[in-house]
Length: 581
Image 1 (cartoon, one colour):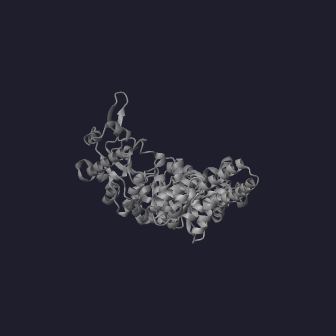
Image 2 (spheres, helix red, strand yellow; image 1 turned 180 degrees about the horizontal axis):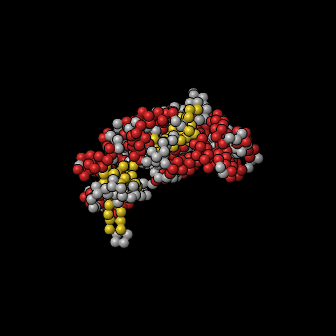
Image 3 (cartoon, helix red, strand yellow; image 1 turned 60 degrees about the vertical axis):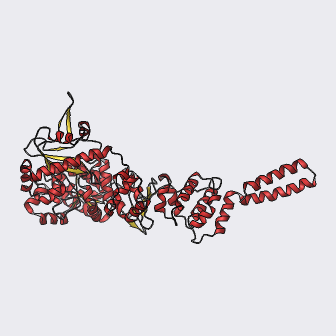
């Protein structure tokens, strides 16, 4: 069943493309438009443009873009029907499942997670088997509201509980194994529960589906935390815990606060701090780094106050600094994590800490390296070189000056000596250095202007469209766009690039953007269209050719050359037939 065009148009009108794109990447206003780093290819200088007026987006680098549907389809790898359904949901526009025609492979794995999450949560909140785990969580300060909101549950310490529960719902054991919900004995291929006797913290992907778990042991068994293994829907390099909930607050504040533990994130969500994300381990993938940089300019670490947490901040912070982010650290007292800090000091003190205590990563690292540097001359020199090298990644001059002064003060060395060690920043330019666009041939420029003029007036377009063929629009892409316009104007009264983008292949959208940006006077006349059509079709040139043939024919008649007269008369006839209007 196909989604009606009225529904599609209603969803498109109700979805603001600037708001949609800004939920994925950081945008800055430039004139009437917004720009940001393209989410579809790696770049350091923003080339992705969003037009609120036209309700389109477009990358001048990789050429990808379109309207709200095309952007969502590309960034989420979804079908058109699924894009309409997802974007329509917050507008209160429900699309029946049968209309989406969405492949069911990943959704089956997700449905299993959703079923088990509800089951585990019910056991935690409403059964004797869950009482111990519930007491543990409330004893650590987790409210019933946050437990319900996060759908935290308990996998009972019972043999084959999860396996049997899934089997009773009709799910195959092989599919449950692929989803990472049960394990398999590779010797006899028997299946058994992967999680049992553990508190289950659901992990959602960046558009809100439950795809895995962090499972904490309740009785001290190792490992303390057991995560879902890599599956088709759970890939740690692409996931960041709580991103789906935190995205809007991150964009609003232009800052991500990164934490180690998922329970830390849950506890912080009970405060007024909302722009928090948990890592999926002790490493950051390239995909993670790209996601973080597109979300915000500023990335702040708030890891545990133990040695492991400090070391992780040092290594991961360097990665992010070199990726172009502004990196900061909020230090938790030694031996505590954010969860424990809130329990001991309260939410107000924690919120004040987040608001007021934030060191630049280089400041933090200089402090951390100081102790080993003071009595070790080799370490002193090496560490100063490392810090000086880091300074080349600091774009803001005031921040760099302050960091130079801090390093000079604590290492007791002249600031100019440190400054002399700072390498020149590499790969920085004041403007995008993309190669200049090629000069189009005169014929192609005429075709492009003619096509642009045609969309100004639907009635003119309909009047002349039967006179246009591949001999008029000889540039193949322009002729394909013209055919799309024919279908578009059968249903629409005026040209709107956002709506028209659905009538052409995505590879041509960049060409349509170029066409739409051509400046043209508003009142395109019938005479102007006709003049261009004569020029492009060859009619104008044929008139000159005919005049020449008439002269030759007259000379042939004067010479009584019957054979030449016949050939010239045939040429005239061919010309008249070819350009007959």
